[in-house]
Image 1 (cartoon, rainbow, N blue to C red):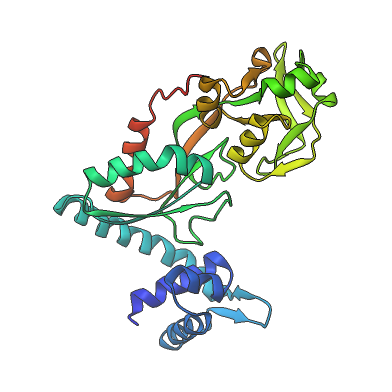
Image 2 (cartoon, rainbow, N blue to C red):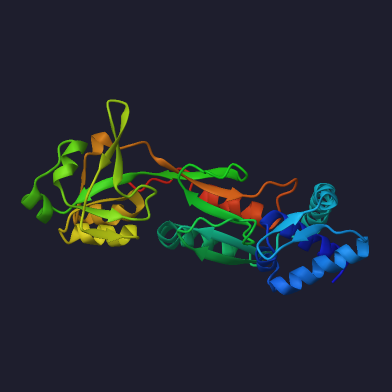
Length: 299
């Protein structure tokens, strides 16, 4: 392994805090990652890392080397990418992570259109509701719903969605129609456990946000499953508008408490900061921003 690759491995260990996580970034083993850094230390004639059975930490020399090296590698990568971008059309692999339901129903058509327009770019997309660490797990970008919480990433807004309360007529005939958010206390609710706080649903009354406690015997970690339970008359569901829209248009459920709807949630493309965004990533994000511009699910 050449010196540049060894330096990259050392940076990965410093950023992730372990040989195992660094090895995962490069698709190798923790033992191999340890050997690579050991060879770098031998070449430099200094110890860069302190190793114990439980942790890896930088020596004073190692910390200083890392701080200088990281900037040099970033400059090298930016120069390398700028030359590639100037000399050829965008190409290569883009690794993207996106939430399962939005990804499968709304993002896939956009990605398929992108794949047709850019045949030299391959897409490796992971649909998961787990919030991954882009740098540690080797992703180029992410699509996420809701206000970004990772301030180390650059966010570009793609569109917005609303979460809507819905119920089937069969359930409403039996349990009544809620007239205010507080009425949900006496209703059976289908709980989406993917919510950050599944047991409190957010509404807005008189300009004030209400966090309304809810209960229910059905708990699903998927919005479409929650909607299906509501269609079956098993309770009220609180689901994104893009999920509810077909069912609302078909009359299988009706929207409730629309006057109390909370502010919409943003859908964002996120990517790590850097002096130069790779052309393959830039054109993908530009494409998604254009595809979702002004998107309205009609709810």
